[in-house]
Length: 107
Image (cartoon, rainbow, N blue to C red; front, top):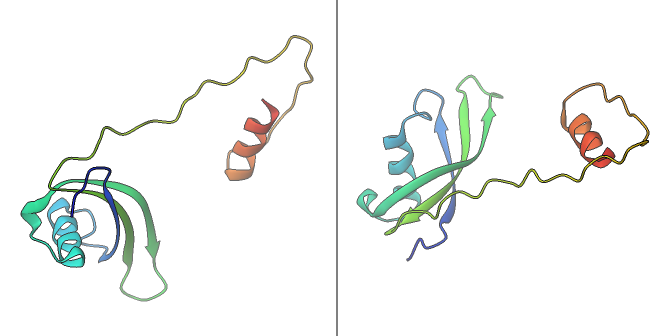
């Protein structure tokens, strides 16, 4: 098993342990059936909270480098086209998913 580009692993941890890097590595190693010493890098990709029960759980999607570190993280480009002179002006109210999408669409 090689972690050249990384392996995506989903783990579920209790709220009080979800923030510990050591616990995350141990959970990933257990899920992959490998020794924790083989895990060279762990990067959080997605995090959600399951609070439907009394015991709150964190569902984590982690990108894991096994036997080698993960490649550097590639950040999204912010190279947006310029607004043409004389273009219509739009007023977007709200900065939720719909508001952000509307702003990008207006560009």
